[in-house]
Image (cartoon, rainbow, N blue to C red; front, side, top):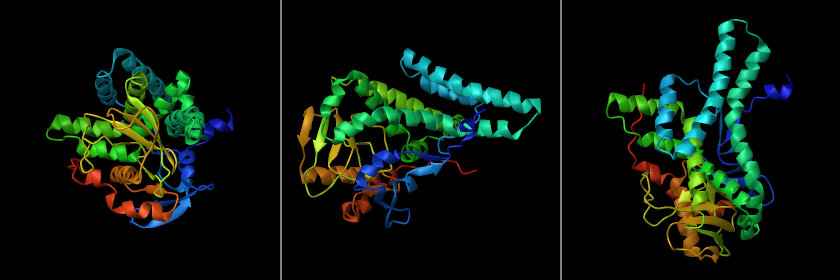
Length: 332
C-alpha cells in the first residue's frame, strides 16, 4: 500500500482557499473578522476551516433511512444517484466493520481507514473545485463566454450548488431551526446532525442540477464593480439577495437571486428577478453596499476583504440572519 493512501486530510476548508486568495492582492493574506469581533490579517489557509469537518460518521439503518427519506423528495434519477453514492461510503464502513470484527488489528490498516474517513468527501469537494477553476479564472477576467460551453456551465453549477450547502454557516443555520416538538422530530434532528456530511453533499447535488437545468430561464449575469467600495466575501460566500428575502431570518426562500462575489471587482448572480439583464452589468455603489451588507448578514464569523477598510462598515451586519432564528437544539 502506498503512503499516499495513509495521508490524513484533517484540515477541511468549507470555502475554497484559492478562491479567497483573490482578496489577497497578489498574496495569500486577507483581512477578516475574528470570533471576538476584531479585524485580523492572515493567510487564507487559517480561516473558514475546521478539523474533520467532512469526516464520515458511522451510519446505522436509522441514519440511512433518514437520508433515504430526504433523497426520495428528489426526482427519481437524482435519488438513484444519491443512493449510489451512499453505497460507496457504506462499502468503506462495512469493510472497516469486517476488519474490526476479525480482531486482527494492525497500524497500517488503522491509518488506512482513518485516512479514508477523513478524505473521501473532502476529495469530492476538491474535484469540484478543480473543475470550476478555469471558469472562475475566466469570469474574474470578465470572460462570460466561457459558460457557452455546457461542460463548463455544468461544472460551475455543480460547484456553485455545493458551495451553498457545504459551509459551516449553512449547516448551523439549518440545524438551529429544525423542529424538535416531539420524540420523532428530535430523533430526526439528531440523525440529521449525525449525517450532515452526506446530506450537505446531497443538497449541493440537487442545487447544482436545478441551476444547470434552469440556466436558460434564469438570468445569469456578471456584475462589474468599478466603484470605490470593493466587494467583500464571507464564510458563506453565496447568498440569496432577492428583495423578498429577509436579512434577519433564516427561513426557506420562495425566490432566489444567488449572488457570488468572485473578486473585489467581479461578482456572479443567478436571478429569478428582473433586476439585472443576462450578460455583463456595471453596478453602482449603493448596490455594492447592499450586497456586502447581505453577505455579512449571512456570515457566521468571517467577512473577508482586500483591506480592513473594506470590511469595517459591515461588521455590525454579521450573523443578523441567525439572531432571530429559534435555537431548537437539544443539549444532552
